[in-house]
Length: 162
Image (cartoon, rainbow, N blue to C red; front, side, top):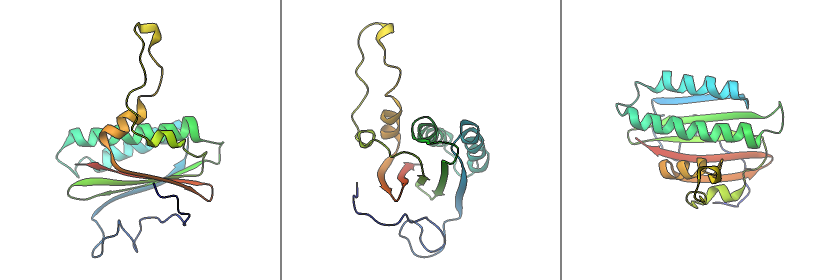
């Protein structure tokens, strides 16, 4: 994790993941309010638009799971009200999906970024935890996870292998 303060860089025409040369052919970018309805609409659009971009449907399902967990966490835990916005950029290349998620909600607790495994589970169905599985799944599927909170904005970057 980089604690250096710097402006958030969006992956646009001038910069795309540090590569030079032509822009990747497959890119999805959206900005929307941090609501459950908008997250559902984005995930539907993600599946419709990207289904033909890879032959490995299982990996695309993994990507949808990670995106759903991250976006729902923003809605449920990070949203500070109706002005909370999400901006997401996905870049598909031959080997992976690279993602940048930016929002102006509450800062992400740094403990989420640690791959601390599954939550503690006590015997008995009544003792099962309600949460704590989301970031475990994210860490199992995604890599290159980086986060910074600068100028009131969260910026989460990660990649998912194809």
